[in-house]
Length: 139
Image (cartoon, rainbow, N blue to C red):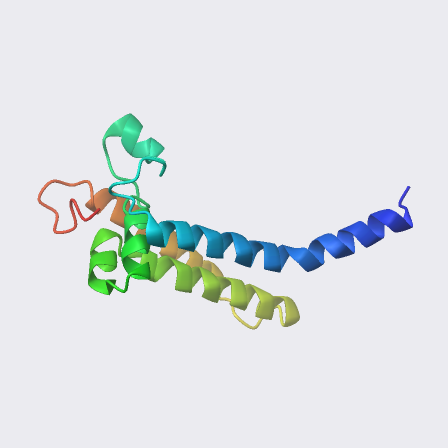
């Protein structure tokens, strides 16, 4: 049984998702700008690193975002290069999936790009944990 109230609350909820998400991202960016992850206690430690002593593909991302917010692009890239690769590719995949809904045969390479991105992340994960690798210890 669906009521008029339920329909209204769902419509209002959907209308507030984007402003809420933007507000949360802005608040997180402000905290990250003013509190350095290297010296502040409240940032969580990577659970994979805590359990294994190995770096995951996301290790260094918080410090990289802090550097990026301060305009230090090379430092941010050195801490986690995937931060500069994954978000644009994910945005592209999202955009192509929207286009594909309008024209189902328009972009058949979307799955290939997704699998290539996954392969890149796994390769980076392995390479950053190999001793002697040029990307070891980036984060």
